[in-house]
Length: 144
Image (cartoon, rainbow, N blue to C red; front, side, top):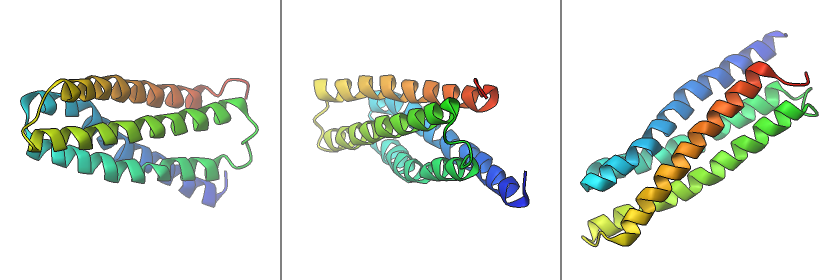
């Protein structure tokens, strides 16, 4: 592994730890604060989701740069595809956070707020599982 690849590996791992960790915590704790109606905390979690969600693209960029010579490997293709699926799910979570905050600020909680809360629970949990599958693929590298 060249010196440049070592730097890319460090950047990739740092991005995973410092971006995906807070992002996952923000999305998985959102439903608790929807239920309690704490709009101030929800605004913070929504901002965290947006910022760290955009930042998580660095994980994909550093990972693709690091694996540039192995993009034909099925485990890497599967990992990158799952990562993109997770990002799409996070876009839906962010939208539901935004809509829920709007409803709570307008003092109109109701069935739609509960539907958003349920979808956030399901999607943020799915994203967490996707992160674990990608981690397993990065370590195991089947067919390598």
